[in-house]
Length: 287
Image (cartoon, rainbow, N blue to C red; front, top):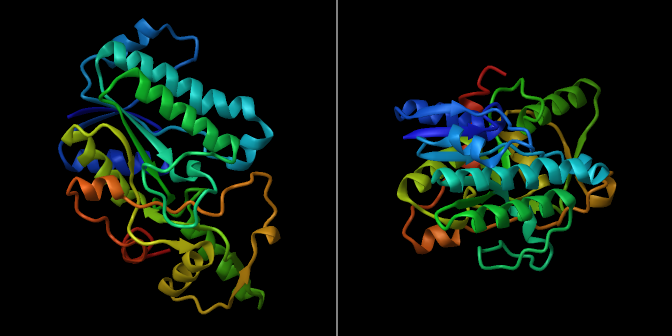
């Protein structure tokens, strides 16, 4: 398979690149096109590819609230342009989206048939991107994923490594840490998600799928597992959402269930805690 990839340097894109190489696929990083690029010219760049995997996004939820125009430019307009060009080139497009766009209607894990009522500019921009991608061609694929972790410890947005850093600092200062008990979601290892994304693409799947690890957690349970599995004996205090200063009104429920995949006979994804342990024992073993 010849794969074109946006966001190749990101948390998910880096995992996709590595797995594609292991499978013997050609994976080429694609630079972000200017929004005034003619669709025909962009389509010419895409021809010959088997898949365009669009993983690039503005993921700074807080900054998106401060600068909504930049958010919609990066997440909606760029996705719309790529979708139009891919359709003209007859190349299927896979868009990486977010389980955070379901909103606040339910307290249980969302399934794909649930309504989407995003509560932030970031998640609304992802929903508009989804709609543009699905309207462009019937074979396009949208995968909604959750709280991604993985990658090198040096990555600034490495959630697990940054919590380890925070815990070590707190220990050195004789302090404690706090984590949110009200925010629910699904921690997702980038390696697991990248592997399932490529498998779905190869199968010819289309439409919207949730794509998360099994199980759910609060932020508190997630951070607690990081500390326990990293062998850091530090008290973790339960905190409420109001205690963490945020501009974005993120839904307290970003949990999702891989209902569509299960109905179609796909195997269950690994449990997030087992994958977190594997990650700590592999990529972060010496951290």
